[in-house]
Length: 463
Ligand SMILES: NC(=O)C1=CN([C@@H]2O[C@H](COP(=O)(O)OP(=O)(O)OC[C@H]3O[C@@H](n4cnc5c(N)ncnc54)[C@H](O)[C@@H]3O)[C@@H](O)[C@H]2O)[C@@H](O)CC1
Ligand SMILES: Nc1ncnc2c1ncn2[C@@H]1O[C@H](COP(=O)(O)OP(=O)(O)O)[C@@H](O)[C@H]1O
Ligand SMILES: [K+]
Image 1 (cartoon, rainbow, N blue to C red):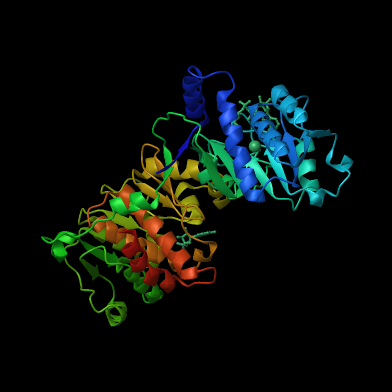
Image 2 (cartoon, rainbow, N blue to C red):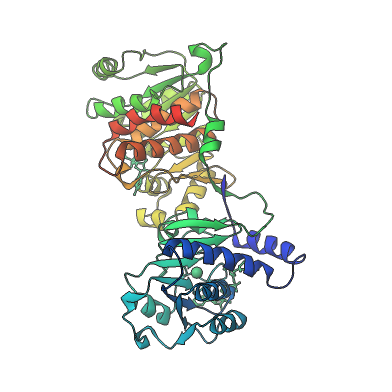
């Protein structure tokens, strides 16, 4: 599991550990890991040109000690202090190793573009969101030079992933002890670049924000055993599509056809059902199901369709048009799958507010609707009542294509039908959906059907 802890949790764990360690030991561990990561990025230290942006706190200490190591490996290191002072012992170590203080980026003898890397040691977990003007000006002058952020890109809100004003945009973020929320949750997560974790020996509590890794997905995925038949494996019912949007029915059924459930039932108009069965001959008609998927392409029939599905008292996935009919707890275990625009409408706020404060709004909706809320986006959030959130880190921007959500709803429904909890079904489904998109894309464009086709290959490998 990739766990993202809060600043308070990290501070408490650091304090516990530091009681048993000599002064400065943790910072030396952090700095050593940071120096290794930078050397790795640069392919070595000799002859490289490095600029450290140093703030006033321990984040600068990490950066300065790491830079001293780079100096000893043959790098030429400049340091620009942003603020009234900086970490004194770290600065002394760097200067003793041959580093050089500069007054401003403009005062550098070489062209700014000659730096091989900028190390952002402005602020870490002690930072308030936003950057001061001198930091913003220095970063603007350094545009185009690769940036390594120490712990977090300075200026982002560490515990929420929100950004408010200027912040560093890094190519690599080297963090210590554990991931922080800003590494997983957008928009801050998009400013991290690749994230590298350095173990400094912290003993941490359970985190409220986490990201499933392949091993955990494999462990959660249901597998039939010799005693199973199609009904014990679970039957998923799809109420999707309409005469206006028949394709949504096909894509939703395609997502449910990943093979995890034992059978698929489709309920819809004869015309749409005929088209579904032409493509998916194994799909049957109305009957008992263990989970319903309601909403993709349902058009104005969505509210009625949701009522019919809820009458069965089984878990539901509520997507697309049916989300508008949700105005409170549904009374059955549920996964709601809005994108930011749909969640904004459900909560009576603007789409931009949901995008800027995605973690807050996903948790708010999970509490208000007493359901698992899957907020779709680059890093999809899966929130359950109580505040736990799983973040999906699989996927590629090419997945933002019409009908991809219909495939996801069908897949999650089929996982729900096997007996997975809404929380596990939604987070596992989202992980597999993203992985399938990445596989299908291979760096190029995809359509929703490609994602559905790639699902079984991912499931085969993950087992
Ligand atoms: N506490 C520890 O033992 C360890 C801390 N480590 C490093 O220490 C960092 C935390 O250090 P600190 O607690 O000193 O905090 P920071 O270095 O993150 O920032 C502290 C100071 O920066 C100033 N500041 C806050 N927001 C600012 C802004 N937006 N612009 C400019 N200045 C701002 C404030 O005066 C604040 O006190 C971690 O992120 C990590 O890099 C690591 O060395 C591992 C061990
Ligand atoms: N920038 C992005 N990067 C990666 N995936 C994205 C991005 N934007 C959206 N997605 C994903 O694309 C899918 C789009 O689903 P959705 O918005 O419901 O489309 P539709 O309603 O047309 O099916 C979701 O799985 C979402 O998480
Ligand atoms: K930083």
